[in-house]
Image (tube, rainbow, N blue to C red; front, side, top):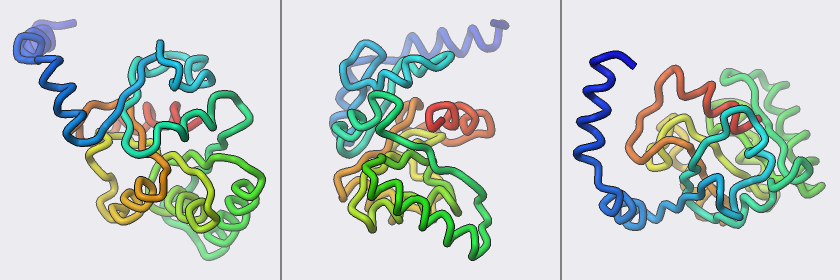
Length: 179
């Protein structure tokens, strides 16, 4: 592990209080599920290195829509889109929602945001998976979309703890959940 990392871990462990953290989660209306919980999506349990915990904001019941491989579908793509890309994303997402699929994407600019917006416009269900803590909207430009997802009865999830900022390595981790 290395001396520096071991030292940081021991320092964190000495200062961390699980009861304080659970209170912080409740104060922020953030729920969590672990691999052992009924609400944890079965299909996610089957990936290599599934997240031990998922933190969420919004409607936890949406996770039930992706319990198997028929309820949810990932829609991801370029952050910089052409008009054609935007039109195709809207068309495909609309059809998927109208056929009962829950849209799972990453709240990024471009295709991700368009897929979430289109799901909401069609009264569909959507799950945004973040590469940071659920209390940190990234990118900040999508704060309004983040709020709309929660207010419409959908949800935002992440495997990262509250307050964790995004980093290069968190996005591949996020993408394995989306997939």
